[in-house]
Amino acid sequence: MKKQQSVRLGDILEACIPANSTLGKGLLTARVSSAYRQAVGSQAAAATMNISFTDGSLRCKISSSVYRMHLATNQDAIRKAINNILGREEVKSLIFI
Figure 1 (cartoon, helix red, strand yellow):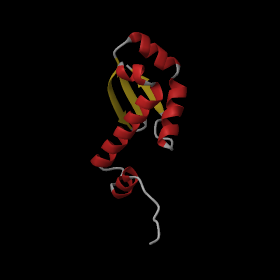
Figure 2 (tube, rainbow, N blue to C red):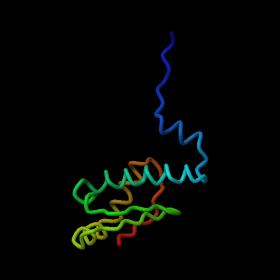
Figure 3 (cartoon, one colour):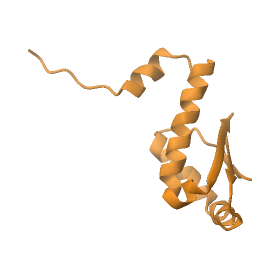
Figure 4 (cartoon, rainbow, N blue to C red):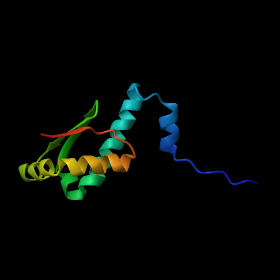
């Protein structure tokens, strides 16, 4: 029996669900949210209360002004890290509120 190449379930879902559908947008938002938390680390992620993603803009509500200032200072590096984790240019701007 010939061994087949494995495929991630997320890749299958992404291929089957239209990106402009409500479910497709929700899946993308979940992937971006996960990549954000991975990019900023556990402490800054814990200070993030709400994340929304629309039209390339990632809005994050931060509970601490200290973390908000730190994240805003490093927002270009964070955006690049998120896009690197995602494997494509999805996040065009970061907004910390």
